[in-house]
Length: 289
Image (tube, rainbow, N blue to C red; front, top):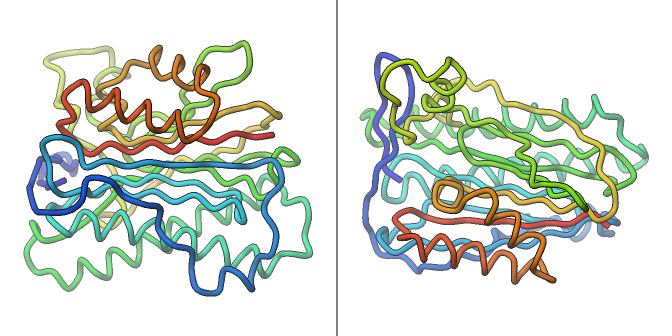
């Protein structure tokens, strides 16, 4: 998505640009050293994802990552326009995945991880990704050429045997669906619209396209929290192209009604397309077992 910076508030407004790319995106490949660094899957964690450019944009600036070896899943929504937004979203998920993989390889003798350790690692991984994107932007003299990205993700290095660490920057989201319970949002948007809601809806509502934080464009303060998970818990990570078009009740129906993670992703993206598909759409669904 293209972006402009609101000089008064420091927020980023996302708008559309068009360039030719395929509509569907695959997950980003693992790093070359993945096979030697980690040799087993995290037991009790599985995730699948699907991304679509939508029906209006020809450029998909979303990215997603899911690796059962790491117990890690991420979505990212690029801002910057043309290839810049895609560069930021793909770069962010690669950097975070790379950092977590290296940490897990070096800490393979420590089990289980403690809650504070997981949160520290994720905080450092996000800072690493942010610095890398800021370095790229430092070489772009024009503001409109700079790139940034939202992120939302979960890291569960021990599956259901230790807490899962949830993290996000911007307005990409994570939801949790527990058996016999309603879909629960685990993230709160870093957006002008959410701030307006929190402040009591005074005055005219701001556009939902203004976000207050994005990796690469400024220093960020990510929300990082660990939660206890149990077998049967399902989660959804998604970009705003999906959450802005599909109501929470519909998200819950799909998550509860689909028997496979792949079919849930396909159904969610199809719903977003049926509602106009005017933005990129990305869904990553996962389960703890």
